Length: 379
Image 1 (cartoon, rainbow, N blue to C red):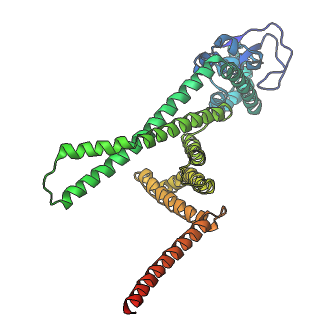
Image 2: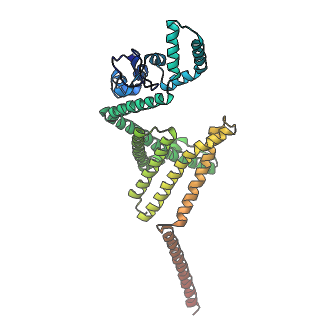
Image 3: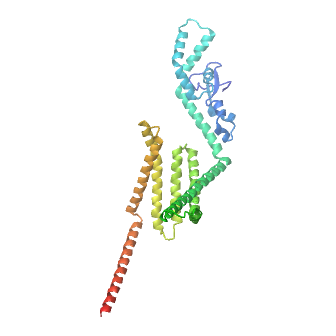
């Protein structure tokens, strides 16, 4: 637990008092056991003994305090002192009331007084500095290693493949169910006779196969968005600790961004660049609303739990947030169409007006030609 040191001239790291003769030792601020059991140290391929014995983790302290602390963390040690405070003060009073003390009682009194004078603020400060230094050492060793780069690429590729497969299967299943419903409807309209399952299954399979380009495109978008979102998550994790909801927000935001870029870059031949950008704005805004919905989940979940609805809080939260997100996305699409910042909707209206005028003119010319033929027949 401690490393003895022959000469230490600094004040005690726990009490601010000067050391008595033969009472000084170096304390592992973060215990050697905690350091030895830390998986991150082994992941960074560091020697736990070297990490435990770095100067930022060693503080001069009274031997009696060090032996009392043992392998406890700073918070555990201070909590134990607080629990024992009343009993300790009582024992100190009883010993001080005695006229004479044995050597054992004298040592005990000295130890209890030193424990009573432990400075909690200094203990916490030393623990904080030691943990910051240890974490920085581990982070520098791991995040700068070849292992981290390989693990990042592997994890991102795996996540991209999973999301790509998910998106591709989603498109395929959607087409399958639509085709199946069409076949059921056709069978029902035909008097529910001649089911011809084999023929209908072949038609369903052909419809799904005909959409291979859409399935492949959805898969590639999923792969790219999954890969990028995982990279973004890891990059943030280097500086912050993300929660599950934050990871979902990153993924949804990245997925919406990739779809918007795809809409602009690989737009259909019949779609203009302005139309593609108009629809991309809707995708980005929808992604932002989904991210906001994920943030809203936590608030609503807490409110429902506060009302005593803990048993159904998850289901109720999903239903409420789902409804809010769906309505918000519909309203956002309507708002973008109404604002029409790129003039796309105005252009569509003008095109529709011109088409109606052309149809009216064509209809008028046909009526005029018919009337002219009738007049020629009468003449």
